[in-house]
Length: 459
Image 1 (cartoon, rainbow, N blue to C red):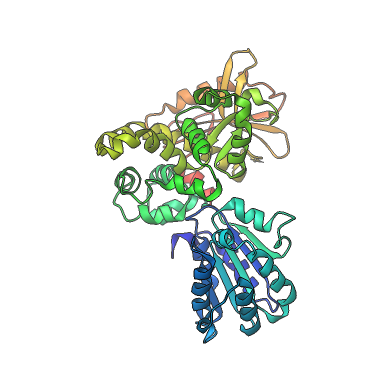
Image 2: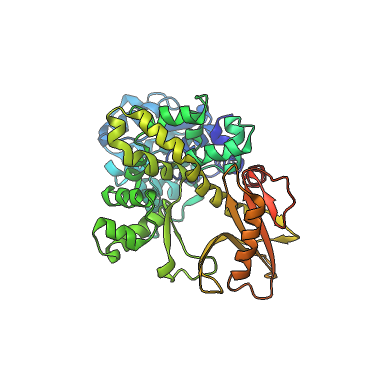
């Protein structure tokens, strides 16, 4: 099974239900590249009843000719005439296609870039000729354009879709199966590099180890993923310079807007809109302490959401000159020395993500977050994991530690001390928990979770 289908049963079921409808219907798939949108289309398309076309950057006339060639596989002779306008091509297709035919236009934003009239023309056929039973599936990697074409009220196709799917990365728990990793800790390390993008998993699976895959795919200037973030930004942004600069600084450890602005020699107010855009695109996460208001700008921090992007901006972008000068081994050595710290950050996030799916000491929990600020004694305090039980009666306070030689007893004792200093606990029961790379042998006053526990629930 292709990795893209490890966790896509619901999506496949919905698309199959759409193309089985008696009247023509519209379905939309969008999301970042390499997450399996095209694979999903091919999974539900039947060659005898479907036209699949990938739009590109060529002029309209050439694209019409290419689409006509694909249509001719279903409607003989369709490509023997020229189509001076898109309206003529679509009109003939909707007139002559049999009931149940599916027209799938992949990378639809590229088509709209050269044929801005296409959405309006398709909307007219969906509205007027729905009884003919021709279905339309649109897919694209540009989230900005796909949302503008379908989700904005002024868009011609707004309100027509019966299915709108944002196809994102796979859940972390699937990576062990995909890469055949028997050790859950190794699976967490792999996820910290590749994130949940199935195409990255497929590429990594061809290499004997994580280091070998990173060396060949990401660090080598000839690697398939060497320039990957550039393409991701170009999908959604007209000017990528500022966005790339912000992501680069976050990757190097600048997590506050004031720090980023200072490094760019710009006022912080000038970065509010570009930062918000990166948040909306799902590239950057805006974080405030658990329980704090999003208006608490003094304690707001930012981080890169995707593990692969974070890895790239931490290890590749700052080392481009060395890598292109052929000093690959020096950068590989740097990755070896700093990878554990990178994985530790992702492990913290996985720990927080697992909390709402765990039952701990008889409680189920709401979303977890980090907390930082002054403790009850007014001294600085940081806690990796904080969550409130769904009934509000208990508070979970936890720490995530990735080091192999972690002293679990010391960590548990330190966490107990933090719990006493934690503000706002009130009279609620407090459950303390540790997320560790290995399960300790000693009995602890804390609940312990390991990579196996986390990956099992994050599927």
